Length: 295
View (cartoon, rainbow, N blue to C red):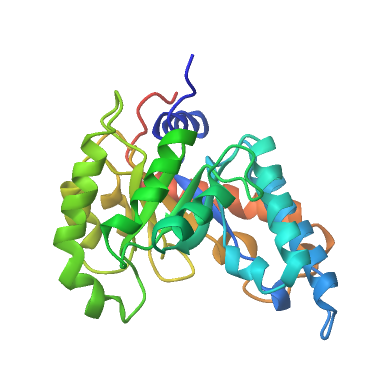
């Protein structure tokens, strides 16, 4: 039998855990458990690996996916990239889907190389899906799309983000890009009507989630901006279809770092993160539509 599509696997995992929460793995060096000022880069990378694996352990069985932010690992050099590879592999081994947050975008063979590093079988940084930037043109998405199709992987294309300056350059292209995403998604829709071509839509631009949910019927929406960035559970509900599927709601620092120093966090970060994730799942679940197929 051919492998399940990314969309089918994601829907199955969301149904299994009963929540659309996706936990971001952002190993800020100064906030890592037990961080010490002036540590060598390799020592920080070791802490980043331990932190990422703690997040994976805390999230296994509680959420469908995790989202490692590549930049936090890349800044740590070769040891940081080794840590990233280990965290991605550990997440998949734990049954979590991996959304590689790299926001790659380039032309031709370079785009294909980025895709090979993350989406191809045996990739050094194994991901189930990848965030990509479309702003060099639709031809630059084709190598990523081809790689995702071959590997039963997925893409999340930047569409409407939460940062303050996003509207200036994104709003002029939203209509055209949404139309492209809808066409690409319709050609790949599964039995649920969803596809492996998703979009990144932030929680905080007023009205954006409801508008783009309606205009992207086949897309999974990856929704940053929830929690520490100001988005509430009520704000992100418009990302959902009536059956509760179609969206992954991201919490990163809000799920993985205390707001102020906490000895319990340094003593046992896995337990602290697990408690925090459970709290967020409950908070989100109180507002979220019931997910079809869950008990």
